[in-house]
Amino acid sequence: MARYAVRKLDDIPSIDDEGVDWKPLQHFFRLTAFGLNVYRAPEPGVPLIGDHDEAAGAHEELYLVLEGSVAFTIDGERHECPAGTVVAIGDPSVRRAAVASSAGAAVLAVGNRAAERFESTWQPEHFEGVPTVDDPS
Image 1 (cartoon, one colour):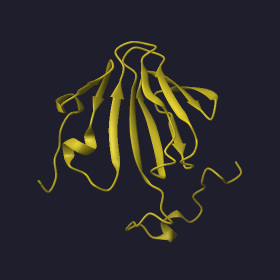
Image 2 (cartoon, helix red, strand yellow):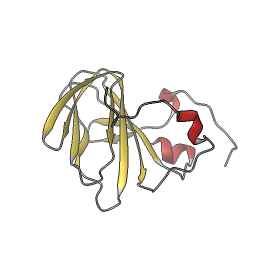
Image 3 (spheres, rainbow, N blue to C red):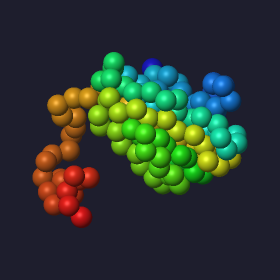
């Protein structure tokens, strides 16, 4: 495996998954630390993320809407998410699905097994005073 790689998203091979342009980034780059995929829809109404939970694998997932608009249904609640929206699902038992609301909608999906703490080179003092989603606004 190469020590690093740089590619344009459009140069990464696609898998046609029931009308979804699936870019298997984790597979293509041979990454092993986390799952990583991009899903694009050619037209509105195309399911980008099938209805599922991650309870069996105990995975946390994060989705980033890269382009267009996507309707996420999370625990039965619908959220219209334009480009730039981040959806973080820390509880693997939460059901989720996403459908393209616009042509060309694209979602980056990242996931891995939940852990006590992510092993990082960042130190706790790097985050002093930086709020989290659970902190009051």
